[in-house]
Amino acid sequence: MEKMKRAERMVAITQVLMLKPNVLTPLTLFAERFGTAKSTISEDLMAVKGSLLLSGQGHLETIPGAAGGVRYIPEIAKEEATQFLGNLAECLSKKERILAGGFLYMNDILFDPSVLRPLGLIFAGAFRDKKPDVVVTIETKGIPLALVTAEALGLPLVVIRTGNKVTEGSSVSINYVSGSSRRIQTMSLSRRALDPQKRVLIIDDFMKAGGTALGMKNLMAEFEAEVVGIGVLVEVRITEEPKLVEGFLSLLQLKALDPDTGKTSVVPMVSF
Amino acid sequence: MEKMKRAERMVAITQVLMLKPNVLTPLTLFAERFGTAKSTISEDLMAVKGSLLLSGQGHLETIPGAAGGVRYIPEIAKEEATQFLGNLAECLSKKERILAGGFLYMNDILFDPSVLRPLGLIFAGAFRDKKPDVVVTIETKGIPLALVTAEALGLPLVVIRTGNKVTEGSSVSINYVSGSSRRIQTMSLSRRALDPQKRVLIIDDFMKAGGTALGMKNLMAEFEAEVVGIGVLVEVRITEEPKLVEGFLSLLQLKALDPDTGKTSVVPMVSF
Image (cartoon, rainbow over all chains, first blue to last red; front, side, top):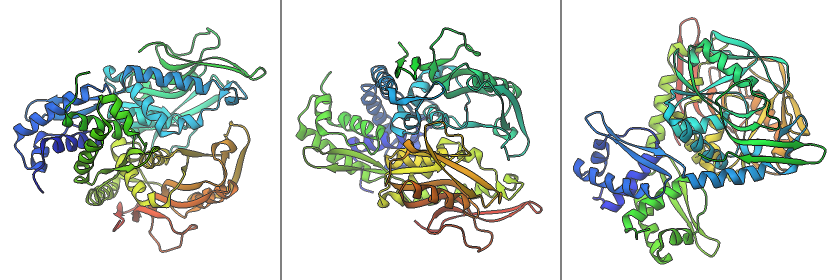
């Protein structure tokens, strides 16, 4: 390969690191790939670091020492996050989204990668300090949201199944009362899906009374896991009735939903 | 903002484009953000394009004209894809993965963002020429795989529900015989989830007899959709018995699985 110029190497380094967010890459890998000295790569990295700092959309973290290297930490700028949630709240406040039972039609949002990606970065930014080991959700609609959050944090995802569908060896099941349906339901998780004593971040799409979140917390206790955070996209906040769980973060609040008048109001969280 | 140097602009451009794969960004956006002439941005882009070409891991596409701009098309290099599938096949061939009923334990793989991302790029590369409008899957385990494929192609995702759980207005349901369970089951999709006459790419994690894939094809016909491709991660290929659907792409083939002897064999597809 022809010897690359500094600017070319800087682009190539940016690409390699952004393709594997949160993954530590040793400097020797770049030195070998570009056929250049490690000290040259160090200088390249300093320059890349400086350029990325200007955007607020992710930065480089360098770990010194023999086992060290560099990794790309994906982020979203605060102003961008605020604007994004504002637009999303407006979009979700349209009356054609009202569904029977006090729900909002959100599937187009929940399954659209271009909407999910910023949401994952917002959750990751909110919970990175809690140092979770794994992201946990329950099927079905919360899966994409939890996946992008896991990826932004560089963590694996664990999906709790509803009912007793688990076919993966021995599993733990618990009963819970879904606040929405007021019926007793079952959720299950395979024993091999989650090692004991992990730090768990719970992510879900919607919270009404919080029964499902409470169920997930109880199930996590069976795995001796510590729930270090709970994040939901939309929280129903029509009355001030307390939820069944405390200390969760909701990005959007559903303040009003009246199928008769067609009035819906979704508001974004105020600050980060 | 202090005026940026060329190398800094190149890194910033790379970052902006990689953060929104497949999204067309007008050159004027960069010109305004960096306070420089559009012709300078054009030169920057040529240099970025050249640097990215060397990696085989994604390239820039420029669209000329007033409505034009530049976008990042994510890709995976052929050698990397081959090596990745080889490693994955080896990992899935371990005997502790055998589950009752002729299944493989794959949840750790199917929910791990660092494994999913390359798989999405491989599917995207295989089906981009078919110009799908939307990626379709069925809950639950295929959702993350379908999501990363949709993101790599810049498309929305549609998730078919099993049973009659759809709470989103009117829906279409069909019955199908899952080849694995040999029982009649139901799958449903909300009418508003998919506009008529779309070009659809079906992605799923596992295919045994192909009953679920056939069901999805039949359901798509109800939406006047054209199925332009079917991709599955693992195809059971223990006998040469034909599947219920034709013309699908499987990335891995399960050639042997014997719970008694513990012998399992998963092999990667041979060529791209």
